[in-house]
Amino acid sequence: MTQSKSLHASPDDAEQAFYDALEHANLEALMELWSEDDEIVCIHPGGPRLVGHAAVRAGWKAMFANGPVHARRTQVQVNQGPLTAVHSLIEQVIVAQQGQTAVVNVFATNVYFKGPQGWRLVLHHASLMPAEQLTASVGPPARTLH
Image (cartoon, rainbow, N blue to C red; front, side, top):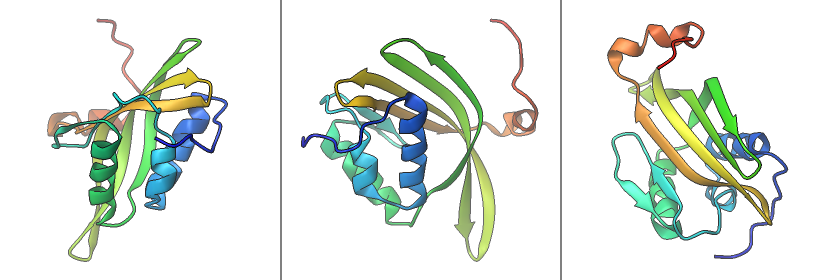
Protein backbone atom coordinates (compact mmCIF):
# COMPACT_ATOMS: atom_id res chain seq x y z
CA MET A 1 0.00 0.00 0.00
CA THR A 2 1.36 3.43 -0.85
CA GLN A 3 1.76 6.00 1.88
CA SER A 4 -1.29 8.20 2.41
CA LYS A 5 -1.03 11.83 1.33
CA SER A 6 -3.47 13.62 3.65
CA LEU A 7 -2.87 14.01 7.35
CA HIS A 8 -6.07 14.16 9.40
CA ALA A 9 -5.55 15.79 12.78
CA SER A 10 -8.73 14.37 14.29
CA PRO A 11 -11.19 11.55 13.70
CA ASP A 12 -13.79 14.22 12.88
CA ASP A 13 -11.54 15.52 10.08
CA ALA A 14 -11.09 12.00 8.72
CA GLU A 15 -14.84 11.38 8.91
CA GLN A 16 -15.65 14.61 7.07
CA ALA A 17 -13.19 13.59 4.33
CA PHE A 18 -14.85 10.14 4.19
CA TYR A 19 -18.32 11.56 3.57
CA ASP A 20 -16.93 14.14 1.12
CA ALA A 21 -15.34 11.30 -0.88
CA LEU A 22 -18.69 9.43 -0.88
CA GLU A 23 -20.51 12.57 -2.05
CA HIS A 24 -18.12 12.91 -5.00
CA ALA A 25 -17.71 9.17 -5.73
CA ASN A 26 -13.95 9.73 -5.37
CA LEU A 27 -12.48 6.27 -4.95
CA GLU A 28 -8.87 7.47 -4.63
CA ALA A 29 -9.72 10.03 -1.92
CA LEU A 30 -11.80 7.40 -0.12
CA MET A 31 -9.06 4.77 -0.15
CA GLU A 32 -6.51 7.31 1.05
CA LEU A 33 -8.48 7.54 4.32
CA TRP A 34 -8.04 3.89 5.23
CA SER A 35 -5.30 2.66 7.52
CA GLU A 36 -2.34 1.02 5.85
CA ASP A 37 -3.00 -2.03 8.04
CA ASP A 38 -3.90 -5.11 6.00
CA GLU A 39 -6.83 -5.96 8.28
CA ILE A 40 -9.18 -3.07 7.42
CA VAL A 41 -12.85 -4.08 7.25
CA CYS A 42 -15.85 -2.69 5.39
CA ILE A 43 -19.41 -4.01 5.44
CA HIS A 44 -22.01 -2.42 3.18
CA PRO A 45 -25.74 -2.87 3.97
CA GLY A 46 -26.69 -6.44 3.12
CA GLY A 47 -23.21 -7.13 1.79
CA PRO A 48 -20.37 -9.45 2.74
CA ARG A 49 -17.54 -8.62 5.13
CA LEU A 50 -14.73 -7.12 3.02
CA VAL A 51 -11.26 -7.51 4.55
CA GLY A 52 -8.10 -5.92 3.17
CA HIS A 53 -7.41 -3.09 0.75
CA ALA A 54 -8.18 -4.97 -2.47
CA ALA A 55 -11.57 -6.18 -1.24
CA VAL A 56 -12.53 -2.82 0.29
CA ARG A 57 -11.51 -0.98 -2.90
CA ALA A 58 -13.51 -3.39 -5.06
CA GLY A 59 -16.57 -2.94 -2.83
CA TRP A 60 -16.48 0.85 -3.07
CA LYS A 61 -15.75 0.73 -6.80
CA ALA A 62 -18.89 -1.36 -7.30
CA MET A 63 -20.86 1.03 -5.07
CA PHE A 64 -19.66 4.07 -7.05
CA ALA A 65 -20.67 2.40 -10.34
CA ASN A 66 -24.16 3.64 -9.41
CA GLY A 67 -22.87 7.19 -8.83
CA PRO A 68 -22.11 9.21 -5.70
CA VAL A 69 -23.46 8.27 -2.29
CA HIS A 70 -25.41 11.17 -0.81
CA ALA A 71 -25.49 10.58 2.95
CA ARG A 72 -26.43 13.02 5.69
CA ARG A 73 -25.06 12.12 9.12
CA THR A 74 -27.36 12.35 12.14
CA GLN A 75 -27.27 11.31 15.79
CA VAL A 76 -23.49 10.94 15.86
CA GLN A 77 -22.26 9.32 19.08
CA VAL A 78 -18.51 9.50 19.66
CA ASN A 79 -16.34 7.43 21.98
CA GLN A 80 -12.74 8.55 21.75
CA GLY A 81 -9.49 7.74 23.45
CA PRO A 82 -5.95 8.87 22.70
CA LEU A 83 -5.46 6.42 19.81
CA THR A 84 -8.93 5.09 18.94
CA ALA A 85 -12.27 6.67 18.09
CA VAL A 86 -15.61 4.97 17.46
CA HIS A 87 -18.37 6.93 15.74
CA SER A 88 -21.86 5.42 15.78
CA LEU A 89 -24.37 7.31 13.66
CA ILE A 90 -27.34 7.20 11.38
CA GLU A 91 -26.77 7.86 7.70
CA GLN A 92 -29.75 9.22 5.83
CA VAL A 93 -28.89 8.07 2.31
CA ILE A 94 -30.72 9.62 -0.63
CA VAL A 95 -31.54 6.93 -3.19
CA ALA A 96 -32.85 7.68 -6.69
CA GLN A 97 -35.05 5.02 -8.30
CA GLN A 98 -37.23 5.30 -11.40
CA GLY A 99 -37.06 9.09 -11.42
CA GLN A 100 -37.99 9.45 -7.74
CA THR A 101 -35.88 9.89 -4.64
CA ALA A 102 -36.24 8.28 -1.24
CA VAL A 103 -34.31 8.46 2.03
CA VAL A 104 -32.97 5.20 3.38
CA ASN A 105 -31.86 5.19 7.03
CA VAL A 106 -28.69 3.24 7.72
CA PHE A 107 -26.94 2.51 11.03
CA ALA A 108 -23.20 3.07 10.59
CA THR A 109 -20.15 2.56 12.74
CA ASN A 110 -16.81 4.10 11.78
CA VAL A 111 -13.69 3.19 13.73
CA TYR A 112 -10.54 5.30 13.48
CA PHE A 113 -7.00 4.65 14.75
CA LYS A 114 -4.35 7.31 15.22
CA GLY A 115 -0.96 6.49 13.77
CA PRO A 116 2.07 8.26 12.28
CA GLN A 117 -0.04 9.45 9.34
CA GLY A 118 -2.81 10.87 11.55
CA TRP A 119 -6.28 9.41 12.03
CA ARG A 120 -7.20 6.61 9.63
CA LEU A 121 -10.30 4.51 9.12
CA VAL A 122 -10.01 0.82 10.06
CA LEU A 123 -13.71 -0.17 9.99
CA HIS A 124 -16.86 1.06 8.28
CA HIS A 125 -19.91 -1.08 9.05
CA ALA A 126 -23.32 -0.06 7.71
CA SER A 127 -26.66 -1.86 7.97
CA LEU A 128 -30.21 -0.94 7.09
CA MET A 129 -32.29 0.35 9.95
CA PRO A 130 -35.15 -2.00 10.87
CA ALA A 131 -38.52 -0.59 9.78
CA GLU A 132 -39.87 -0.46 13.35
CA GLN A 133 -37.11 1.96 14.32
CA LEU A 134 -37.67 4.47 11.51
CA THR A 135 -40.03 6.70 13.49
CA ALA A 136 -37.88 6.48 16.61
CA SER A 137 -34.86 7.70 14.65
CA VAL A 138 -36.45 11.07 13.93
CA GLY A 139 -36.25 12.33 17.51
CA PRO A 140 -33.29 12.86 19.80
CA PRO A 141 -31.27 9.80 20.84
CA ALA A 142 -32.70 7.81 23.72
CA ARG A 143 -31.06 8.15 27.14
CA THR A 144 -31.81 4.56 28.24
CA LEU A 145 -29.01 2.79 30.06
CA HIS A 146 -28.42 -0.86 29.32
